Amino acid sequence: MQLEITCLDKIDKTAREFIGQMGNHTIFAFYGKMGAGKTTFIKAVCRELGVEDNVNSPSFAIINEYRSTAIAKPIYHFDFYRIKKIEEVFDLGYEEYFYSDALCFIEWPEIIEELLPEEAKKITITENSDGSRTIVL
Image (tube, rainbow, N blue to C red; front, side, top):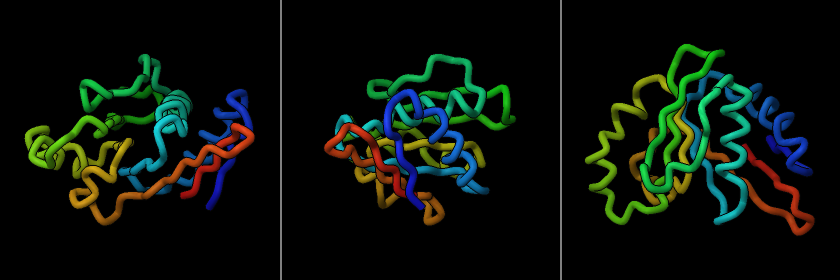
């Protein structure tokens, strides 16, 4: 499946479409180059899921936790860009998050790919030459 973000004004509509395609999946691995819009899209998805907290990249914290007014389970937002060794992810206790039935949105999953559960949904975000984004599920 493919979704398009033609401009930032339409990102919430695309986020709703994405949520409609999530099904029973709980782990979403977002692939894309720096600046492709991974964090911006995750912010929009969280907003549409009823997160009222400020959603931002967990670049330095590695993980942020959000609560939603629309769903009972927590949402975990990971950014593994700064991870240098896989042992750092073990120290975070990644299993507690990935196997908790909480929603997990993961940026830079290629760094920890060997630890991703088999059922993780891989999402690719690509910036097009006209500035729009293509999201492939």
